[in-house]
Length: 116
Image (cartoon, rainbow, N blue to C red; front, side, top):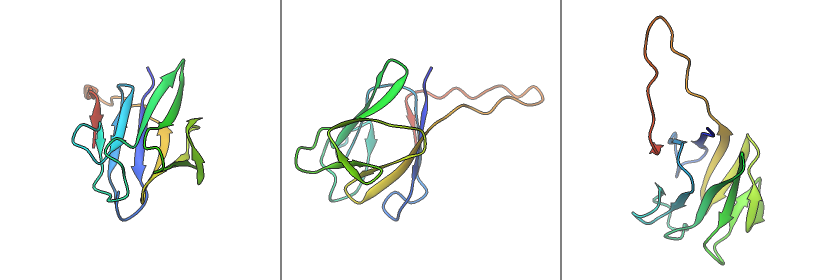
């Protein structure tokens, strides 16, 4: 199972952190977005992260409001672990995520969907 961690990198995303386990997931300013941002430059549904096989990709859904991956505007692109994803003024580092291994009989927390 592929899981991604999106780690906020600026004032708009602050120290927000999202764990994504269900795909596709949308990012935008709308309440319908899987990851909702309060960035005035982000479209209601700005982009979508989806899986193709065991690889994660980002798809721009905002038309003229671009989506950037490592500071390059993209319409559809593979997300390498450690890549910088920017929508509007909000930026995240995206990396593969594995839950911590249980220690001393502590059960593993099960995450569903998006946590942030």
